[in-house]
Image 1 (cartoon, rainbow, N blue to C red):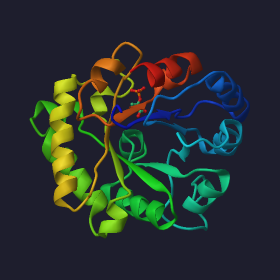
Image 2 (cartoon, rainbow, N blue to C red):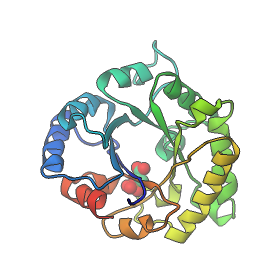
Image 3 (cartoon, helix red, strand yellow):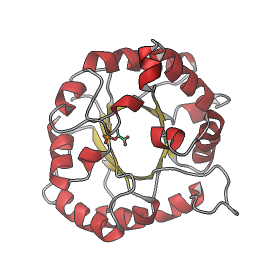
Length: 248
Ligand code: PEP
């Protein structure tokens, strides 16, 4: 059997509830996931419930939320708690996406609190880490990624750590059409996997994200260090996304 792969679709601030329903209808028509392949969808919070209902229950499927707040409830206008996301049908949460860090100013301490909240509330955190172009050009890629990882996972016990999945997403590759080469990505994935193993993670899974599309997914996933992909723009078209999930 081929190795397990996770194909995660980050729909960002796109796809209204009716569009999520239409996407699911088109995507599911004749869809046969390969053995060991999982497909995760991260709709906007307002479309999580519609997506969960439209996709239904499948062993290969998870619906996630793009961000969570660390507090369980209260006066946090615009934020989504873990419990609210779970009640809408989410079982997974993106945490520390580069747009949260660099557009919304989320700190490493915030990200750590969100990882803890997701785990405490029963959601699987998909923790995103990645360096900026300036950091890459300064030769700091591994240092930055490992610092982000350490900050986000500090204090987690072994059982909690075992549930964390990581996505390496170089900031300079997200939405830019530039992507790391399979060898570049593999080098960072090895460092991330090594740090996770050293911290006691029994079976780290590390996805790659950053301008993955129909033209480059197969080459990236031919690199055994990649346990899947996290995809923004190229996940918005049902036929194109399906060809990535089925084809790579
Ligand atoms: C992302 O949103 O995590 C992402 C990788 O976006 P894109 O595939 O559009 O670069």
